[in-house]
Each structure stands twice: as structure tokens, then as C-alpha cells.
Length: 111
Length: 242
Image 1: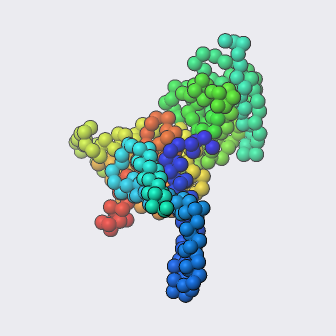
Image 2 (image 1 turned 45 degrees about the vertical axis):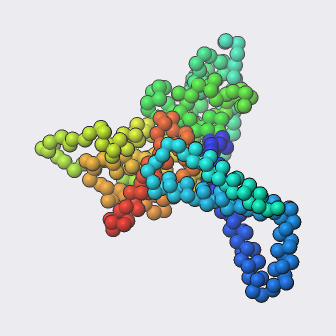
Image 3 (image 1 turned 180 degrees about the horizontal axis):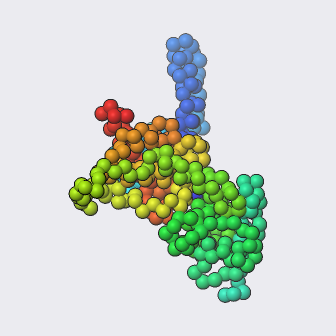
């Protein structure tokens, strides 16, 4: 619907979808952490699997989602608790830029 | 110019209606309301729609035009029926409100929510008191002034996804009006009002998508008003007034 086609709505969507993605990811994350105590061998096997390029790429997407959710959350807190600022779309652009930058920094260190 | 026409799909019936297609002559500086009026006066007198002033003051002619809620009297056909829409117009009633017939919606619940939000002035003085002095430069007065020009057209209400998803949500217009009153030093209904606009369906339900700000034909900013109400309710809660 065209009335939703504006940057702050996209930011809302990114925030909501990244939140749901992280919610789905967290149980797996905790499961892998639990392996460190219960099954060291399985953990090592899993960690070597994460070295694969495709997994690194997926991790990059995850980092971007995490950064987008954090910066988006800070943006919402600023809207709700600080005085109103008219440059909302610029703030959305900054949160987007920071999120992509976080992903790129991770990729640079992934090799 | 008179040879040229525009193809217009207009919603007919109630929620379970259908589109009817008309060919309307193009004119210079033609507005969407002009198109609807042409259809009603020349092609189908049974078409229901609502308008009054035709000049952006009364707020009664809002409709969904090519997917976006707009005031039709101040929306030029040139602006909305470009190449992206194939030069066509698609006109529907406002979203989020019950359709009475064709393009006319029942605004009752929209105004009912203004009442629920206690978005009315509560006087504290009598005719025997002197005039209240309010400087136009006062920061609170500036907040009130920024939101006061609402014409109740319902465009923000129709565009709001929170209204679409939560029937009890008061909506951008009622909350915007409440915020102007929160900033009115003469008003005596503050505590009741903050209670009325809190909780489920109140200002906290807003997801800050800012579509109301994006769409408001008067360029008001209901999202900023709602953010102000959120801060006011937190302050009241800390003080123990809520």
C-alpha cells in the first residue's frame, strides 16, 4: 500500500522483522553455548562449520540485524523520551548506515 | 483539452462492493473532487460522497486516492495520476472507518474517540476573572499552536496501521488534540485527560510509524504530539498523578 511507502515506515518494518529474526535465533544461540558444558566435541565440530564462507555471510546478516535492532531501538527511545526533532528521516539514515557499517566491520575481520 | 479523458475506478457499495469505471473529461487544474463531482452530476447521480467547502477548510472530502488517503479538494489529478498509475485514478472510501455507501464513511467512531480522549477544553475561570495572559513565545503555547489547525479530515486515522490493528486505539487526530490541551495553561482537565489517553488504546499504543505525519494535509505532526503525551504520562506516573 502506497501510504506505507516512506522511510520511517521502512525503519519500523526493519525493527520489527529484525526483532523477530533475533527471537528465532536466540534459542539456537543458547543451545550452542550449552554445548560448551555438555558436549565439547559437538561444539568444536559446530565451530569449525561456522568457518565456512556461507556461514560467515549469514553471520554478517545476523550482525546487521542485531545492529539495526539496537540502533532502531535507540531511535525509538530518543523519539519517546527526548524532545521532538524534525530530522527523523536523517536519524533513520544514520541507524541504517551504522548497521551496515557494523556488518562490514565484521566481514573485514571474518577472514 | 475537452477531447482528453481520464479513466477513473470508483468504489461502489459498502465493504463488499466493487469498482465501477468511468471516463471523465480532463480539465486544467482539475482536482480529484472535481472528478468525483463530474461523475455524480453527469454520469451517475446515485454516487454518494461527502464534501462541503471545496477549499481545504472543512475536512469532509477525504478519500483514498490511488492507495493513499488524501483531501480530494486540494489534490490535483496531475499530481496523483502520473505514469506510475498508468494515468488512471482509483478512488475508494477512507480506510479504518465503516463505509456507509460508495465514498462516504461513517465518521462517528472517529469523533467518539475525541470524546474518549477528553480532547475538549475544560475552563478554569469565570467571566468575572481577568483575561489569561499567554505569550505567543511561551514554549508550551508554541507546542499547542503547532497542532491546533487540525480540520478533522480523518486522513491520519485512515492511514494509521495501529488503528487498523487495534480497534480501541484513539488515533492520531484525537491524541494530537489532547496534546494541544495538555499544553494549554488555562485548561483544568489535565489529570483526567492523561488517564484517558493512557493504557491500551492510548498514546502508548502508537508504534511511531509516522504515517500520520507523512500524510497530514495540514502538515501537522501527530507523531510528535503522541511522543509528547508519552513523556507527559511518564512524568505524571513518576509524580504519582497517574
